[in-house]
Image 1: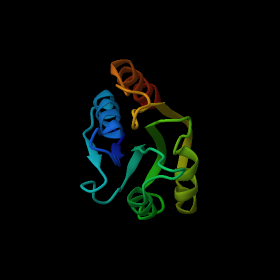
Image 2: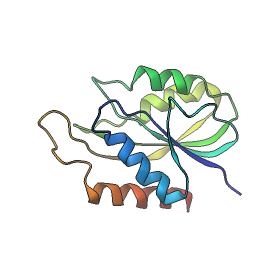
Image 3: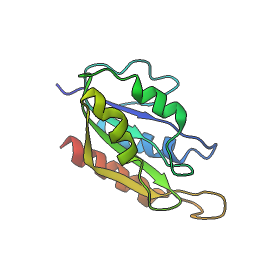
Length: 140
């Protein structure tokens, strides 16, 4: 039996990443966990990581959380998130996890997210459905 986990870090009250995490988790039959409540990550086959980029970087709290994941505790990590622009958190997360031998999938999910006056109403129902389909495809 595969052990999968969905963690996320959502910076705003709108909770764009939280909403995506709920869609991803629902598709694979798991419960999404904010990093403040996730505890240790141990023995996970696929770790879905919800992260967005703010001013060119991921949230420092998420960085600290990811740095604490032990070598060999995750077989594969998969990144999802939203952004006002086009930048995914995938590459930065891969750099953080690489020293512990954790592979980050080249596949990631990114959709528009509302920020200030741009992308109002995003992620929308279509974005959430696409996030669910992405997670289902990854798990197979």
